[in-house]
Image (cartoon, rainbow, N blue to C red):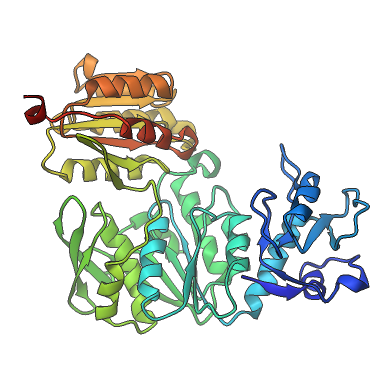
Length: 468
């Protein structure tokens, strides 16, 4: 993590007003959360619509913070404590991260895309860690606050940093790539997420392509070549950096081919640029693409194929994404972190491919941020759920009622159930579960369906042989 004198911090943040007697004090790390501040850290109080971090300065001092940035518009407390005044604490946070990044001898990989960026980040971190000191974005800290915090958490001796970049509108990735200055940029795909703000998938592609603005001129750009819309938008721009593509189609630089998919893993082969077989202990065939993107980066940094496979065996996965949760007598396929049409169809495909279950149930919540066609997109999901694979469809949320309504065209009415709240949902699913069932749970983040997963985990469904 960052370790700098307050004199340096003042310069890096374009701040002022630090008293002379404090300038040689060092900070170790930063925090924007007064509840999580650690001894020796720099506190950066942010201001939002419903909060103001400046109000918690006394608690921060009690916990041992070394200093604080301070918005010049806020009254400075009459306390003997190091304050650095800045025009805006959020901008100061970003300036500090940008300056720190410029001082580090680290290679940065920036990853964006509608789906798959977190899994690609996790896989790539494991591969790079076989040879280099590597750090990655923690959890989902991939926005205008999370990205600078990720950069500031890098140690001086970090050799590889993997920075996930999210967006919902134009200009957001432009900011993040300017802070991170990636040496490699990856776009995993273009989906329907954020249509509410960006209106069209073409605009989503353009927003993701902002990552190239900060890409080192000697760097590498990697993208999913099977995505025809993304490919079309890329052909419109002049890219000076080296470009590599991946996918199943023959024109890709790295062509992959799916092998065996089972309950906990998949195998696949690279056909070009050279033939190699890989095993990935992750659920869902879409991880072939995420792994292939990661392999391209690993090979770029001269990691052997043997080390790549070793890295694939030890992936540290971010939670709530396509993970099997085992309960007493049944299993939950927990994919409750985010949702959009492409990721729902991928999750359903994974559900269908898992054998050995006596019953399969789907629990779906709203897919948010889809724009003017959101109802139609929910209806299309309902129509695509296979009644030969799924016994029950449960939904929660006003938009997901349209999933259930459309699903009734193919399902019996009593097999498609819309619920008004989580408690009702849990109760109705509990009544439907049979021994050895598999339940998919998926929704946009705001619905917090991980709470449904936790509630269902407490249930015990006895196998029929035990009942007998």
